[in-house]
Image (tube, rainbow over all chains, first blue to last red; front, side, top):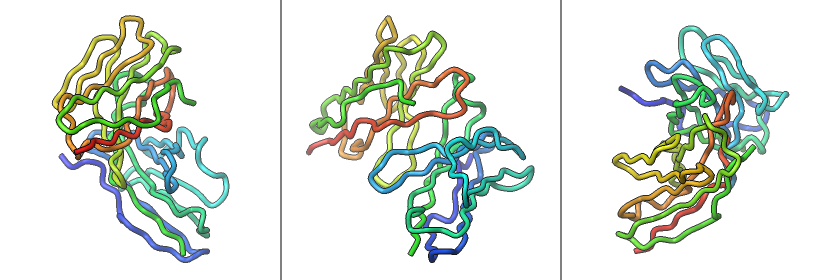
Length: 117
Length: 110
């Protein structure tokens, strides 16, 4: 049973380019979460999705960032016109249900390290 | 926002038990306590969680006080590979995500 798969592991983009980060949740998990971790900082929630729906995007910047979780295929975090400040580790997690529903935690992927040059 | 407080850092000698405390004095009756850790540059790793009773698994033990206002994560025989940041998290009722605070940076010393 594969865990949460993220790719690529490392991504280098020039300023102004687009970055696409992919996340395949664990089998049986229909809830996907994206977190960002800036260098030497903690994990910050960005967005929570279920299949074909964005449930909570309160942590995602309003400009340039978008996320989707289509019916088929992985969840995608898309960053348009990247800037140096977007350089960070982006982690995806999945779960069977939301933590607020009780006894469900997350399984995290290994992350994508985005470097903007 | 954070509902937990943890010490910023702790040291532990290799082979000894590491006891990581966490205060969650405003926890509600149906909220769980989760522990995760993040080893440098890796994704966070689930350790254990509990509601009221003490819990034990192959990684650690979780001791929750009777009033549930605090808990302790115990790594019974710490190794160098246990050096990581440990996060104590309370799942908030109706929340859509887990809030990761600053955690405790545990350093296991040879």
